[in-house]
Image: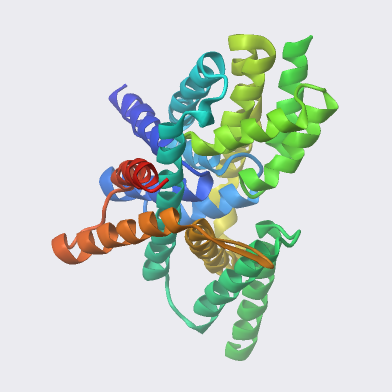
Length: 186
Length: 190
């Protein structure tokens, strides 16, 4: 019971402070579930992110379900997923009922402009942490650099190319590299 | 049957949105327009609110649209519908996940995908930091003085915490500090 409550409230906190979508949440989950609670390892976390990216639906929901199921099966998955939804659900409901033009309240708009900038830092530092923990070789560093440059180009020029296609390319390169290595060794 | 429509509409969004909220927005727009729930301008405002409030953007948007169409019941139905596919799919994946990971082919693919995801996240962070200060939508470049100030302060806080106290600022505190900085800077320099 206490584990379920722990799951619910941990993800409640993550849901309450996650601004700016899934990538920002990765650093929150890493902070709470890997470093603080030690529910999953960093390796598991990377696996969860890859699975979350490759499956449909909000990345936050995918990750919460993943961690919850790992800890306490189906009930755990429900507890963690509800935990991450409930805060934003209440906030949006309140906004939709009480404030007709919520973002036109000046102080609210200012705070959110600040938060938007903070979220960029959050995502960047999550990525830096991942690079630090990554097993480094020519291939992995090359793919990080290549994917980073490709994604920047996609963002800047607003190309109609999703991150999923980049990941597919990564998978193909990984397989080719393993094939070459296997061939050379045998 | 507005509730059934909401459920089916957002179930479709939940099933087919890959790669996070920004990939889902065209899909949500399609669903919302085809049912005639909102006009374009209201939808854009809803997206802006969903992006600015905490929580997954897609879930926020579902709650918002549901609430606007059918009150509390609509909000509950739309939110559950958008979450359900991701929830079920992850459970299914996890049931076979461990076995799947042992295959050499899967491991080889993952060895390429993992650094790729890291690169994508890195790019997203860099782009967001730069884009806030100077809107980079080629070929337009627009410098934002206040955002530059907030960015500089935040950078000082982050680096100061690491050098001065030898530890990282927790994400929650970073959010709180950046909200306060936003209020101060944008109030003082309108």
